[in-house]
Every structure is written in structure tokens, then in C-alpha cells.
Image 1 (cartoon, rainbow, N blue to C red):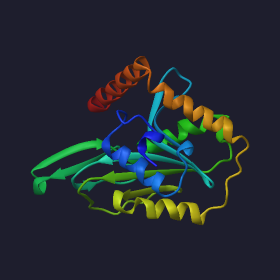
Image 2: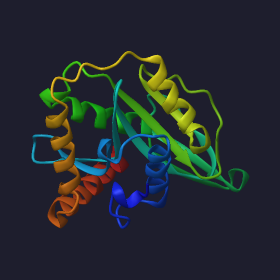
Image 3: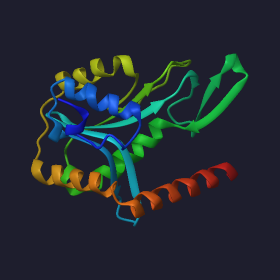
Length: 204
């Protein structure tokens, strides 16, 4: 039971690979774990998702972050703030709740996901601390890495089994999305689109 059964170890971050291993160790089959996927959202652009896990109760979409210091933010703020060195250094980053909400929306555009619950899981690795309480939307979870499996297992235990109409079609769609990440042109276009968005946000 190794990460290699799920993904190429050159893909994603060390924290993403640690998350893959945590899920494998929990008993989820490697065939239900999809790492570093590039989903064609239908407009010629690709949505990159760190990790998607198909479970008996629905799909869990992971956004993995690596931060130290104090983290300030709220549900609908466009940018959150990381504070280091007791306030001497401040850095902005895009709200991961909104980021993963968009990932979930892109996933739901595919008819295979009609009626299947989708859960958004934002996981922070690193020595960070959330400094304010954040109201979370339905089926959305924000946690540090040391508590993520408790929440993951709670999702599995406290929800009804999902009614999958065609598990194989969903698996094939997600497998193709993983393969998309092996295409250097797709990856380059995705990075280009992110840079354009960052530039636009900077000047808005």
C-alpha cells in the first residue's frame, strides 16, 4: 500500500502525497483516489484539483495548502492573510473555500455527478493557526492535517450511501482528468490562465 499505486511521485506537492497516503491507510482503495487532476470545464480551460476521492457517500474534493504562521480570513473574503514573525510579514492568498467551491462547481457540470453529494475539504499542512472562526457552507470542511482523517471518517459515517448511476463512467472521467495532467500543453495553459487571473485581481 504505497503512494505509487495512486500517483506519480513527481506530481503535486509533498503535502498532497502525504494526504494520498493518509487516505490509502484508512482503507480506501487506490482505484477510488485521483490525484492532481485537470478537468476540462467546457470552455477550453482546465480546472486543476489537488485530490478527488470517490466514497460510498459521495465525492470528496480536497484542496491542500502548506502554510505556517497565523491565518486570517472569512468565508466570502476574496483573499486571506498569512502573518509571520509576529506581524512583521504579511502575505495574501486566494480564499481556499472559494477556490474549492469553484472546483466542486466545475465537477458538477458533468452529468455523471447529478444527485451525488460532493464534499469540499480544505486541508492545511504546516505549523499554522487559524486566528478567527470561519462560517463554513454546507458540506464544506476546513481543517489542519492532524485532524483531517477524523473529519473524513465522520463524513463517511454520518451520511447516507450515495446513489451512483454509473460508477465506471465517473471513474473513467476522473482517470482521464489525471491523464490530462501528463499533457505539458494543458499544464502550461492552466498556469497561464492562473497568472492572468492573479494579474486581474491585483489591479481590481
